[in-house]
Amino acid sequence: MLRTIILQPYKKCERKKVVKALDELCSPEDNYGWASAGIYVYWDYYTNDVLYVGLAVDLTERFKQHNGFYPEIDKRTCKYEQIEKYFSDNEKLGFSIIVQSPLSQPVTSKLKKKYKEFTEQFSPIENYIGNEGTEAIKYQEGLLIESFRINNGCIPKWNKMNGSIVGQNSVKPINFEALKVISNQTDNFLLAKSSLLEIAENPTFERFENFMHGVRIIAPVYGQKRAIEFLRSQSLIDTYGQMIEAGYLNKKLDI
Image 1 (tube, helix red, strand yellow):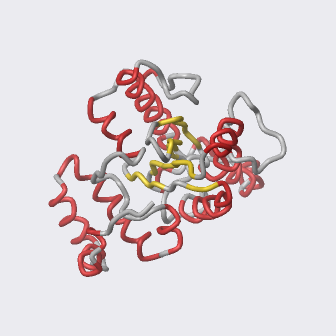
Image 2 (cartoon, rainbow, N blue to C red):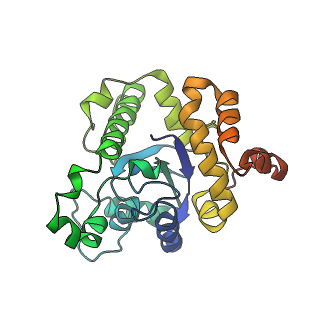
Image 3 (tube, rainbow, N blue to C red):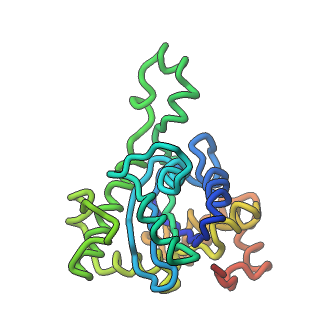
């Protein structure tokens, strides 16, 4: 379930750092952190205007495609030219991701390559790994793009399509509020207290945000307080207690 929003504006010279952080936290080969499949959003760092809403089965690879890490790109699907033009006039570009649990990890080209011998001998890997993660990002992309369209009269200027029809038909007022969180216009319970680079560089912050991701998943059903109490009772380590002691819940996101 897509429940945690992580922000990371970056300068053109910082692209490799973002790639390293994405690969650290959203690798398809890990069972910790978050799944590689998620939503990503580009936004104007200076005006907070949403420029593009996209989905990726592999967030690291998609970021690399958009940011010129490969010599050949498909101009129809990559935003390399738009990003280059943006950086010609601006120093910093807003970038955010919405992530989901590694339990929702879909099959990627990396996994297919890694387990090629196994999948050739047995049934295709797609048959026994669910498509939940892929369907979730399709739905969320359509929902966010349509929410933007309803409130602005057009889709984000770097987008060409509206996304999932199911997502479009499920828009609620709260979804536009999510776009404000994603583009750094407001604070919210779903927003990580640390940036992408901070979480990738600090294992304690990563553990804190993984705990909060669980809280964010079950809070809509049980309420935030009960969700925290339940997860604390199920944990061998009192992560939430450590968060309080460290003052993490009062941490200011500095981006």
